[in-house]
Every structure is written in structure tokens, then in C-alpha cells.
Length: 320
Ligand code: PMV
View 1 (cartoon, rainbow, N blue to C red):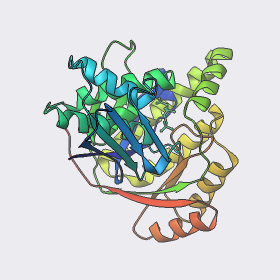
View 2 (cartoon, rainbow, N blue to C red):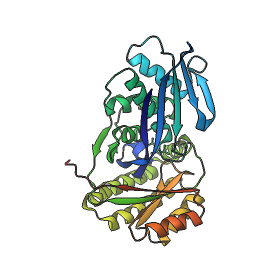
View 3 (cartoon, rainbow, N blue to C red):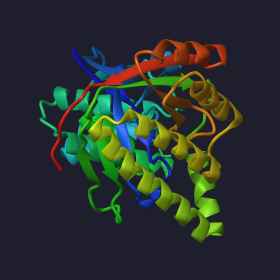
View 4 (cartoon, rainbow, N blue to C red):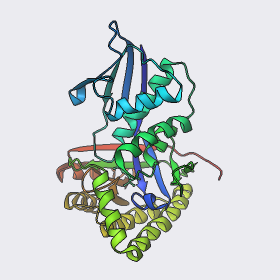
């Protein structure tokens, strides 16, 4: 029996503008995971999928167009494996779906890791990320690649989408000068990534000057946030997160529920707060201190967050 897992992710700053080649910063969320097990099947049914959390059961032969079936076919093809094995693949995940926490990319990453183990192939994070990206691209249109990258590398990263889809993205692990605690509030509203991403594209096409300016302002803010993170200057970082939320509102991807949770966190002592991920639903994040952590978490629950998580990113040094 093979077991593999992959963490969730959180975009600290720079979402949406990252699709337009501006930098973004993303963090792995090690407290929640997607899990994939592979067991040899006694029957000759090829590959059987069991996803009890989603109440789904399917086979590769019956549903080859399913995104995870396609990912497996891509994996088998890239290793010139012509006969799918007789196995049962079980998928479980504690990452809420369609909420900005990288559930889809985490399931896909755990699946590729499990298959690599099954075939005794040693894949690098870059190999895994590339396979998952191809799958995300097929089903989500124009993904920047940030989700698959941060999840495959499991490090806090600075990310820039390449100009051409045939080139690799620019990715660097970043320095975290002082441990960082973020509280995450879930609006409980599920929103498919491609919808707000499509809306932003349409707005940009209708008014390129205005939206290019907004993307550039986010990019500048993300560069400043990287320096603040490296210096452990959480006061400055918090102010930048607040500014990033305002710019995301201007892009049209916030919602009344996200704005409400962000305002509640700000009023209860968070150093800064913003929506995280594609928006219109999903989660927001708040930067807290040990003194404000509990009160911000409690205030978010009272304000209607359906789930409140927290994550601490340890200090680490990476030279550019
Ligand atoms: O898939 P989500 O909701 O975690 O966020 C995607 C981030 C975007 O910048 C909005 C899109 C992308 O491909 O980077």
C-alpha cells in the first residue's frame, strides 16, 4: 500500500495580478492535507478511483476525461507506460474545495507523488509541479502556476509566471525574518477560480490602461511585502495586506462577506487582512500577533466565518 500527501496553500499577496506576470507570494499550509493511497486491486478493472469525501467512485476506463483520470494518463504517457495497472486509488482531503486553499492542486500533487512511489520513480518538485500544471491548465484556462508550485515545493515562495507557457516559472524560496501567524476565515461560499479570473480578464480587455495600472500597483506592493517579511516588520506587512485588499476590491473580486470578515479582523486588532485566492467566496487571511490571535479568531467566528484556521510560518533564511 502506498500513501502520499500534499499540503494546502495560501496566497499571502499578489493573486490575480500574478496571472499578468506580476510577482506573488504564497505559503504552504501544512495543517491541512490531501491524501492519496494506492492499493493493488484483486480484479482486472484497471484503475479504480474512490473519493468517499466527495461521494464519488469511477474508473479510468469509464471516465477517461475526468481531470484526475487525465492526470494519470499524462503521467503514464510521460513514462511510456502502456498498460494501466490494476489498482484502487483512494482520495481524501481535509482542504475545503473551491475556497482558495489549493484543494485541486493538492489532490493532484498527492496523486502524482503516490504514482511516482508506485512506479519507484524519483520525481523532483519541478517535475511534479509541471505535471500538475498541465492538468490545471487543461481545466482552469489560464492558471498562473502558483498553486502547483508552492504545493510541490512546500516552501514560502516568490513566484512570477513566465511570459510564454513553454518556459518554467520563476520561483524563489523567500526569507522570513520572524515567525508569522495568520488566521484564515472561510466565508463558507464556494467559488470556482475560473469565474473571477474570467471577470478580471474581461475588465482588463475592456480597459487595459486601468487594469494594467492596478496589476502594477499590486506587483510593487508585493515587492515591498517581500522586504518586510525578510526584515520581520509585521507592522509594515499588515499595512501592505490592507492595501492589497483595497486593490483586489478595485479589481472586482471581493464580496460583501469577504469585506465583512476583513473589516472584523482589522477592528479586532489584526495587523492587516485581505481576501486570499481568487475571491467572490472562499477565504480571507489576517496577520496577527500572539496577543491578538485569539480575539481575531473569535471575532471571525462570531462574524459568520464557517471555519477558522491558523498557521504559523517559521523564520527561515534564503539568500537571493
Ligand atoms: O485557485 P485559488 O482560488 O487559490 O486562486 C488562484 C489565484 C489566482 O491568482 C486568482 C489565479 C492564478 O492562476 O494564479
